[in-house]
Amino acid sequence: MAQNKGMLRGLEISPDLVKGIKGFFHIKVNNTGTQNATYDFKADDTGGQCNYEFNISEITVSPGGSAEVLLTASFKTNRPNQLCIFTVHKADQFGHQDSIQARLQSKAGVPAWAPIAGIVALVVVVAVAIAMAGGGSDSDKPASGNVTNPVSTSTPTQAPATSNAATTTPATTTTSPPTTTVVTPPLNLVSSTLSMGLINQAYSSEIVPTGGKTPYTFTSAGALPAGLKITSLNDRCRLEGTPTEYGEFTFSITVKDSVSSSTPVNATFKLVLTPNLNGSWVFSTTITAAGGACSGEVGLMDNETIKIEQTALKVVMSGFVNNPANQMVGDISVPSSSLGGGKWVVIVTGSYSEDGGTTASTRTLTLNSPTSMSGFEDWTWSGPGGSCPGGKANQIVQKVP
Image 1: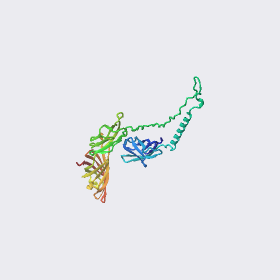
Image 2 (image 1 turned 180 degrees about the vertical axis):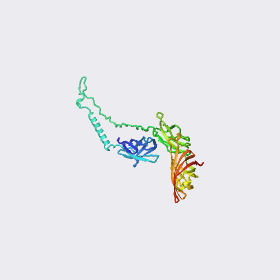
Image 3 (image 1 turned 60 degrees about the horizontal axis):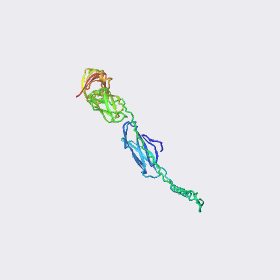
Image 4 (image 1 turned 120 degrees about the horizontal axis):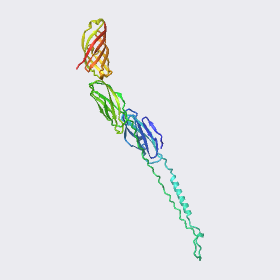
């Protein structure tokens, strides 16, 4: 057998040529992806000369792992000098496909004149043997007459040689198919920061180990955020639920695979759950400083309802001066330690139309509770009637139930 190996991306075959009526081929598949992949196989040739049989119909391989499948190919007719060029196809559940070719070649036949030559040789051997076994001459026979105690001097007649040649059937050697070995990468779990979530809003994030043998078993250590739990699946776990507290959380996950002798592995995960500002808020504003045309407004108070929309740490406020088109945008910042008394701070900026002119504002608000903020505003106004530099205001903000 030829021992060279062909390879196409994640598919290998060895050997790529076998001489005989039947041959065994190793099909090796390499999973170069990031998810478990289940592969199925088939083989064919354009002339339909051969039959094909795989030792397994499909196989699942972990990311970065490899596995072997044994293919038995055989000619449909027992004739010499046949060549079967066949193709092995591999496909996974994601629609990815590979193919690779190999060959099976039957051995050369016996020449047509060979059997006749063998018969002629056998006839010659028999003829020579008979000739050598003929009777002795007359001088070897006893003389006639009165001979006392005649002694025979004749040579015993030698029996004709008989050919014992027989057709010998060559011994047949059967080679057992080699054992298929599947190599499984070691179990691994990588520490990471999970996707951010908002309190009082459904949350779900998956944690996916690699290697080992599924199903996996998961356990957690450290306080999970209130409202969240770990759900074990076959090849991953899911942190899910509706969180009811915001902050920065750190906890560890330990995973054990289904091999009793393997060692569990663990990793540390971080999760940030932000306050949920989505909804309507009442802004109570008291002007504490104003210059120029607005200097007489110091001490004025005003209430207005503002809509807040939050996506992760991005915040959009709209509805200033009772106009939905008047918006300010900004961020809510993560404190250094929200669980240790740190405060979340919202900072938004923007410009909008007011009293025939334009107000430019920056608002800095500290979150005191999920439904209460307080802070200050720096603002200016300019319009046809003049300008108002150096404006400042105190703000108390309450969420509308």
